[in-house]
Image (tube, rainbow over all chains, first blue to last red; front, side):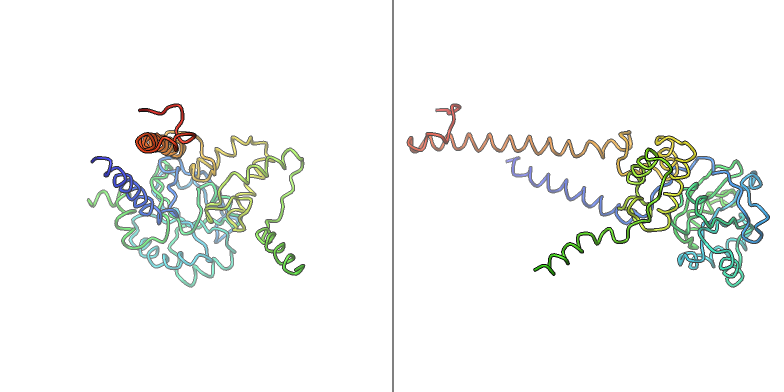
Length: 179
Length: 152
């Protein structure tokens, strides 16, 4: 009698396996970063606004900051732009831009036109700094704590919901106000 | 006929048409290591292609990174570590055997084992069935069909 249920059991197991696989499939573009909990790469990059000024990780030590990887060629970054301006307006955490594989003139024009949410923007036209951070698309946003540790990485454009649920609660301001 | 053949030949080489501008390393030894490395890493943007085959700019940057590290004297192991520590095991086409990847390596073997066992089980049962039937009915069918293991 039991042997009639064996194929059914195997079938059910295959269904569960495939259902899990399909459930995971859309997350294929979200590869978890091994850098979470690890020190952020130290960097000293030319500032977008002034090539003679350097944006350095050393100067950011002791502060929470968001490192936002963007480029003028990146459509999702345009979608994200208003939310970044809103975050900058709250003054909760400074935004540091990493302008990835971009032209200086276009990037400056873009910020002038759309508004600049960044306290500083590091310029990485060659793209090698982004590799140090394990970046594989834009926008990507890292939360870095005062000890220089990467606390969290958000992949994709920050929406108001992502800010409220994923990013703010990981910042001291979000924890103080109680979530 | 020759036209068709030409078209087919053209189609055959079409996948290589967007080939990546080859990178020259100073020594053949470095060149060989470079080629091997770029074939072993996944392009993170178009995830089913290797760095060697991917035309996207991130892959070009990663190739440049590998080239720089090779020229600086890094070992293959150091280069692999550099990428794995930033992008995770996902970037390797052949992930190492570790606790987190054990299921990846073991599942095919387990499934093969289960399949083999069920095959053996089914074949044995069928064989036993044939033996019994031929024993019951006609002795003339006996030769060849049932082996020395014939019962009753």
